[in-house]
Image (cartoon, rainbow, N blue to C red; front, side):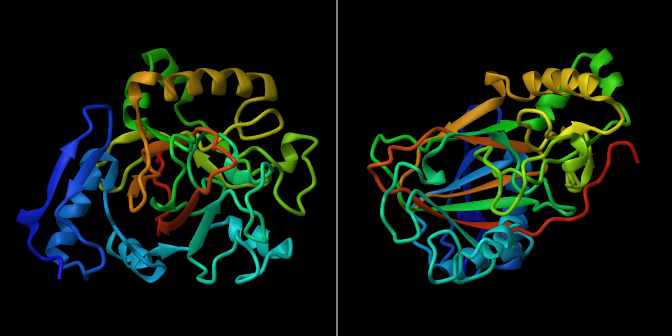
Length: 306
């Protein structure tokens, strides 16, 4: 059993967030003492890297349970509605709480058109549902050799803290309705009609700044933003909302707040969706990239305006 906390070593990346953690083998059960130690390291570093983790899906879900429980991704319902079925699709895993992220089509062949090849803009996983996941686990099964697919993360505590005082005042009490009609590539979800106005964006409303339930710190919470009509500030008109969001995104995505990870097979990354965003570079469509993701169960968003 993973039980001795003195075996755990966390080595910071030296960037604004992130640490590599050694001394843990998630094929073994995790003791309560080690779980508490890992939760503290996660709170300190926001993104954790575990190398050489050869896990099956049940073991990956066990890691999610250790960090707070598992949660089914909001995108699964869209794929099922579009006719993708577990066992007959590379996009829908047999286990409901597993998401397969790959550049293969449903027949298992590489394709230039697969969404898994596209670059992904900065975003937060599943902010378009009422209770977003607290964290995401991504496990590398196959990765391209010098073929892209690098994942970057940024620190949204520091993004909020870097805002000028007048900008902090301008966003005080503001809320964002999150885009639920597009996926992370910006493409419209299966069976969804393109929106014609902000009224067609029917995702939940979250505060522009949230309080992390464990650290008590404020973090910007922008989710994702594509061309209008998309996520917007509900208290402002379209022009005011777009202008203010553009300012906030410019602070949220500063280079000095980021760290980029280059994947190896067996890598397991855990990041905190409550205080970090992530992005991905494009992938060489001639090489396989297959990842399995599990979401860590979330709690109701704690508003900074409460």
